[in-house]
Image (tube, rainbow, N blue to C red):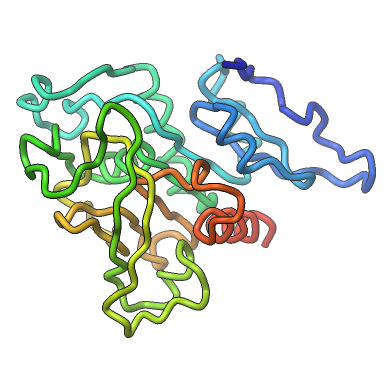
Length: 251
């Protein structure tokens, strides 16, 4: 896989065509799929994981994305028993992402969390995680099976202003059958929900699949447990999340 360094992917902060400063999106740990999803002529994309001076990098941040990856150290949410259930962990990444989240929250930087990124949003704000979904919730919904799987999720929120930050604009929230089929590749998930975080959608085992920070706390902080960057360029959730994130940055 191509390694993304801490260089700005579009290299220059100044647009050659407009001579205006581009906005900068910071990815906690970049990969080709995330970069392709967010690539746009209006933005530079930076990989925080390869940077040595995170404090300086934060000064450039116009948008922040916490991406998918390893399990979060359960000591971050005070559950040492989950150490037995965790798989690979990356303590350096935990530190980087906690700092990125805290900065996004305090400075009202538009924020998107993906998979692990949604879990970090909850943990960094005081919530907890299931250490292993099959062990603690059972297998009525398969969230992974030797790789990525697909399963249905149900939109449970009745607030258009929140729902439309993630899901298509034409969704009918009065309809109890607002079901979307999404991809899934994780064995952990949100357990105790942090104060201020609103659950927007769930899988049929009750596991949160999409959340939004209360707008009184932050104007644009959204996260999903699935992977919109891998749903395909024509997928409505893929397009809607990308468009709303860009709009929040450019406001």
